[in-house]
Image (tube, rainbow, N blue to C red; front, side):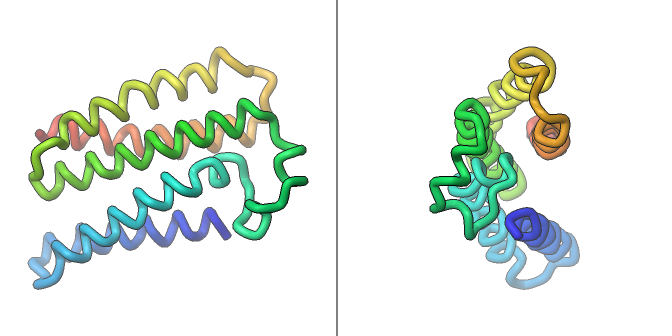
Length: 151
């Protein structure tokens, strides 16, 4: 369910961007609302998303006994960095000042953390976990780099 929420929030963001391109009257509100919802989602639930924990299991202590501590910490940090990056992309799309700083603060640490997680730190980690981190973060990193070069 948590992956479906992320998917629908990303569709909501895409809908807002399309609405802006076709000059929909409330496109700015739609963009702001959708980007901020996605950012808050990553900030609050990033650890659960990256570790495959569902909403109903977030408050159950047995869930965390099966998950290693470093995975939870990586999920929290990556969720925060993804949240900052979504904010930076929003600032770029809207032309607000501060977009460059938000993107800088999120792109480089996230890229280094992803490379460390995927190649160096824990090569014995499950492939499903590593591939989830890799694809989700590198798609977002690609969007962040596009926004960075759009400045």
